[in-house]
Picture (cartoon, rainbow, N blue to C red):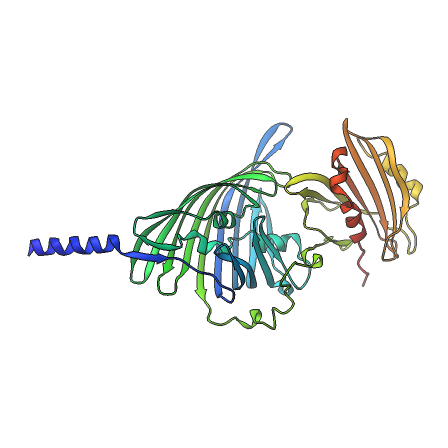
Length: 436
């Protein structure tokens, strides 16, 4: 009996070890699923001030619940998807300051494009805020799931290299430098297979280099032929970038996925009729910003990144393929009487007295034609700011009711051509809300 039992165990073990599992998904247009994605993040921001590093503690949580419909696939992964968010919310505590973000109800429909430049999200309903864009772009992207698998039959214990497209998408890189992520089938029984993803990956995000160490595990339904759960843990080491400080973070993502036989009404053909099938119109790519005190508002290209905000100032930085090329500062200017504005000579005096600014050559000094019944005065000059060569333009904008704002741009002389007309476009976008 002992001999028979031993033989049974050996046969069973041998069969289990050599049982192959078809570990592959084949995404196609029309696929629908419902997702729950939860994030728990801790770590520290590394800020350098006066040559000394300051560590600022950071903790954040986020929850996203949404239905997703694949609109097109490429490279074995969904390349174009539509999502309807039931929940998209995040809270963070940075150095003791708490902030909460949530997606507006009228922006619940989001289209997600995946390409070689990363993930691109937009709302067919109109411009998102920067916070809303971050909410729907920076959570774990399930478009990567099929690429985490080997795409073929494997045995328990077999390993494979995660596809580069999936690695870039899962790690949320704008560009992939190095893919060292490896998958492994760890068990298969009762219609479920479990697998792990481990290794490191390097890439670029918003112009900064990021190195990730990943330890993840997931389950695959061999009957439904899809990943159903994934727990993704990563350690981030991010260098200082043009729009964000260096950081060291640890994050855990718990993803749950449920197949949906038919598209929900929020993602049916009628609802998705406004979604462009080809190139996305520029108007759908813009972001919107409203001053918290209602003093001004504007829509702007997403190449501009908000990097700071106080009661008086809004600071944006312009990136071109990850490179910092200009900074803009928006200031609410003193209000004038209806139909009037600050005199040009008074504005010039304020510009010439700007702290640390020395003018060497004036490039432009004139009233500018502007749409919407606004008056705009522009002064552009070469000079030095704290002994560094710089080109600055100062733009005073006045609305019909006397509301005013000043937008100042600063750039190195060799970046003027790269900025092109994007500074003027931002100025022309500034409007003043009608008073109730």
